Length: 116
Figure 1 (spheres, one colour):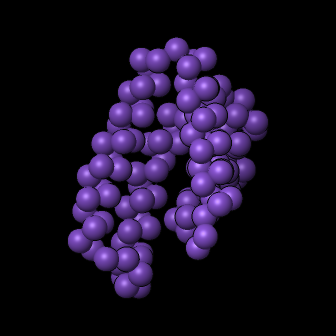
Figure 2: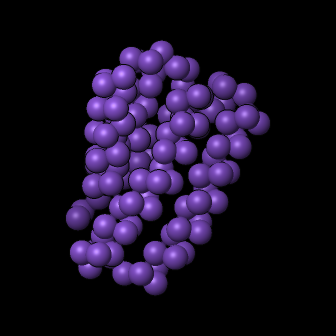
C-alpha cells in the first residue's frame, strides 16, 4: 500500500512539474503492478485530469501561466483524454501499441531538436 501511494505521489509530482509523470506511472503499472499496457494507458489518461487541474491552479496562483489560453487547453485537453480513453476500447491492441510507439518517437525527436 505504501509503495502504491509513493508511486502515485511521485507520478503526480513529476506530472505537475511537466517532467513526465505519466511515464513514471506507466512504468509502475506495467512493471510493478503487472497491468497490461492498454489498461495502464487508460489509467494514465484518467490520472492526467486531476493533475492538470491541480497544476493549473498552482501555476495560476504563482502567475506562471495566462488564464485566457488555459481555457482552450482545458477544453481540448479534456476532449483528448476522453477520446484517448475511448480509443482504448475501440482499436485492437497491436494498433494501439504502434500508435503509442509512434507518439513517443515523435515527441522524443521533437524534444531532441527543440531549441528552447
